Image (cartoon, rainbow, N blue to C red):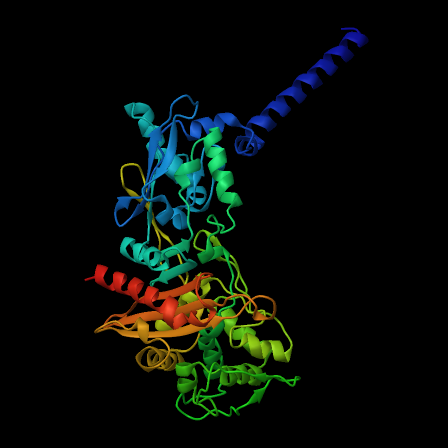
Length: 485
């Protein structure tokens, strides 16, 4: 072969090798990237070519699939009582992708997850049509319904946990929405979704997980925990060094209590019973910002929580002395999700042990065989068992003979704390009503609850945690207890 021909042959060989390398790079190295691109319509068509697996509550499906007409997407998602379950499931839309459990567990629900490889392979030989697997949740249907019924037409959220395992028993957010109205890919679906996005009441906002509020006086249980854990006080019935009036440090501003309360040198138990701002503001100042942050971190503040749905981080900030004192009573820059306050309550009820919140109990094959079962996970010790039991005594006094009497349940020991959180410029907006509580039986506490209500229609003077939020918590706790009998 002469020299020019040899050069042409080498050049062609290099081109062929480059083509082979490029082809293998695209087919193997970039396969997942290309598959998951939103522009890849084939993947979306395949995703809706068969019935989606279901999300299960109390052994029953709260979701389903129906055949569509005139679309290359054969099936679309439907919900049974969509507004009730949307805060848990999220949505799955042919046009607008998915959210929450529908998104996180999409591989199982579509049947494409590697854990279902055997089922997919078997169906090729048996001729069975492809099916998605199921997601079994921890939710308690009766508790979820009680939460929604209690919130009614008011904005707000409810979270109920099993303190001993971390299982989420209720997760409600109002106003809610029906994911079925935009599950397809028609113009009508697009218009329905846009209407929800434009709604000033934000029905698609998950207030239980993604909204942070000033916790108000419910936060005083955290400040009390910090006082006990750091040895500032150890006897919950001994007098504290709390003058009245008490002036915020580095200011000339006297911290106010709500009404003529017996707060001067009040014990921790009495101060929590009647909700003394002066006592807990001074406790927070005596401890200092660093120790308050250390205590809040032990309850789960200052980091995101995954249930597996992500919850925003609740924040106890680095701050100056007067702001730290205000944060100690749940005001200033102190911000928390309802989930976080349920975690605080659950840790106290569980003798100081904080369990990781979760809402997926099992993953199942289409044949209902379990391929994953969640094991409860301890996040850490929020406080000692001895101090947790002291806090329980204080919270039970609040319900028995304090601001939380509307949370009482006949024959059941209940501990709780009310909160009325100011917000807006110069506290100009109507306050949020809070209540946190737990119920206790012979086998420990089966439920801890956090409720927040944004009732813009109520008269400002009628807004209180004990009046608006405590009855909701009571009904949710009762639903959980009754379901276990």
